[in-house]
Length: 368
Image 1 (cartoon, helix red, strand yellow):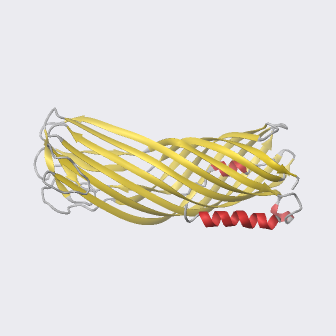
Image 2: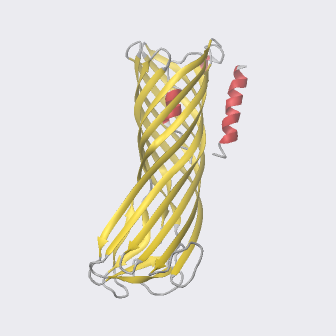
């Protein structure tokens, strides 16, 4: 029966992972912590924090003075720091000592964690037109839409909204190795898979004219990977323990970008996918893959509440490759029609995630 439990949980994770950007979050690691009771358990948890994404730039630039070849003096760009939450649930089983080989350690357990996350960020910029300035518009497909005068004293507003939603599945196996009285080493190994959907909604408003320019981009990332972790726990009292855990692993990502833009001038409305006099629309798509490193550390405190173990803590996670978007823009003013710049593309950059978390591990069935 013990082997059937392991095989069944492994099958669930392997079957779901390809369908599911994976986070390999700390909720699963915390739920698999020390001081386990043999049998089944559940561990709901929540994590709130900040996720940094690669810098995003618009394809609209300001140049001065109004002459060809003038240098670029303005470009809206923003490095998103998304704030949000991630909620999850772990279902696990703890084997009795002696049920598995001794070299695996004590209180061997397996757990399957599923999580859902939602993060967002908003940035805006307001400017007053400098004397003799020109605004250059480039579509997401790299074409030169055109330019318009930016009269001195006129108002320009730009807004960018970013949203991230996703889910992942994480299958983890852990065990304990007593080091000395009150101290325990807990190694674990995991396989994970997931999907993240990032959206970028940009609006440019030039009140003189008026001119509007919108960019809507979506990046869908599917990834699978694995990691190992090691936790050191000090049992300060019979009911309180402190834990430090470090982890590291690799993750393979496949990201796909789909984007559209929409330019409207004077009284002509901007209608996506419909081109007519006074408006312009464009589309772009791009796909890229990358293998990256993901690692981090957490520090937590756990309280035995008799009916379950409540753990509170904080963590940071480093990723060597996070997918983002690089949009085209011109360093010099040009009125030449057609494709004058490369299209928008996926770019990968490193970044951190900082979070605080809470889990509650509750035994369900004892004595198995």
